[in-house]
Length: 261
Image (cartoon, rainbow, N blue to C red; front, side, top):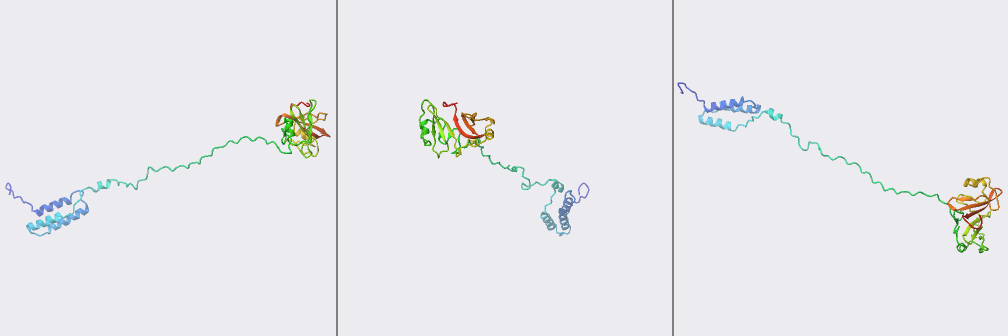
C-alpha cells in the first residue's frame, strides 16, 4: 500500500502480456510478426501456473521468438533497384570502322605518240632510202653496194650513179661538195612510195590531195613542175615529172644543192 492506496504490482506474466500487446499494436508491425506475437501471447496466457517455472518458461518462450523487423515496408519499396553492370547498355562501343579505300597506284604519264613515218624497202623519204641517205659522202654511198657504176664528178659538176637492177631505186646524184643530193626512181617496175603514199602512176588529182601545195594545173618542163616540200624534212623536197597527167619520175632531193635549182 502506498499513501493509503493499495497498489497492485503486476506479475511478470502480466508485464510480458502488456509488452506483447504493445508490440502487436505498434505501427509498422508486419502480418507475420503479428501472428508470431499472438502465438506468444496465447502461450503466456495458457502457460503453467507455476510461479518461477511459468515465468521462466514465458521468458524462455519470449527469448526464442523470431526477431521482428520494425522498418517500414514503404521505405524499402521506395528505393529504386540498382541496375547490374551486365544489364546497362555499353556506352563506349567503338564506332564501326569505315572501309579503307585501296591506295591508287601512281599514274604514269603517257608520252604523246608521234605520227609514225612509214619506213622500209618500199618507202622513199623523208631523208633517204634504206641506208642511202641525203648528204652522205660519196665514199660512204659507194660502200652501200647499191650501184653498178660510181663515176667521180668531173669539171666541178655532179655525177649520176646508176643502181643495180635489183635495187628499188634507179639512180642517185652525187655532188663533189654535198655528197648524195638526190635519189630518183623512173622505172615502172619500181614500187617505192613516199610516206604519204605518192608513187609512180599517181594522177595530178591524187598528188594534190596528198600535197595541197601542188597545183592541179601543174605541167611538165625540163626540170619538172613545182617541187613539193617534204612534210617530215624541211631540208628536202619531192620533184616529180608528169607524163600524160600521171607521175613518171619521182625524186627525193636535198635543199640546198649545187647541181641545179
